[in-house]
Amino acid sequence: QQPVQSPQAVILREGEDAVINCSSSKALYSVHWYRQKHGEAPVFLMILLKGGEQKGHEKISASFNEKKQQSSLYLTASQLSYSGTYFCGTENAGNQFYFGTGTSLTVIP
Amino acid sequence: DGGITQSPKYLFRKEGQNVTLSCEQNLNHDAMYWYRQDPGQGLRLIYYSQIVNDFQKGDIAEGYSVSREKKESFPLTVTSAQKNPTAFYLCASSFNGLAGSTDTQYFGPGTRLTVL
Image (tube, rainbow over all chains, first blue to last red; front, side, top):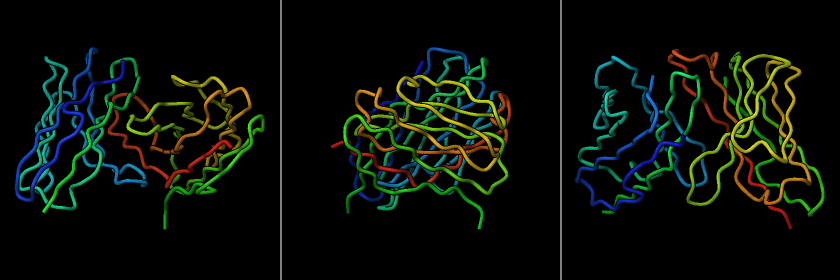
């Protein structure tokens, strides 16, 4: 029931764009996105609710396709500070919440 | 300042010993969670609690125990029955943990447990 993220890892140069995908086998009510710096706690980025619109925060935005049970996180014009591991968290109708497998993102100069 | 504290940051334990990890929050959140994170892996839920004196097992509860005697505190005991306890342990809290809410989880800094 753990959502699957892809890619597992990605390396970018500053200024490049990236997309991280999160797929679930269950119907979803909401999708949460978090970023974790190495050795630190995950930090909340945004939440997308069923029936909700695409969310954005500066150059990081996300979409939620309820029919496909998928969410995508878009990082545009990446900065060094974007480096970290990104996790999606999915909530299904049974009040079950699972974090995804994680995507390691490295931005290099 | 409101937040979640975990102690200690690093913990070493001999095989066969029980150890308790502390988690305290002053955010007035009803729900609290314990996750385990292994290198290169995601977060796996050990236990969670939505209200004082009540808690539920997560996916990997075997070898762990918790208590929720106070709203602010949710300690985790790693028992000798846990076969592979070396990991990074994260505590989190959220407003009410109810389905359909816009609940987000706030994480503590984590405790890195090493079994010698």
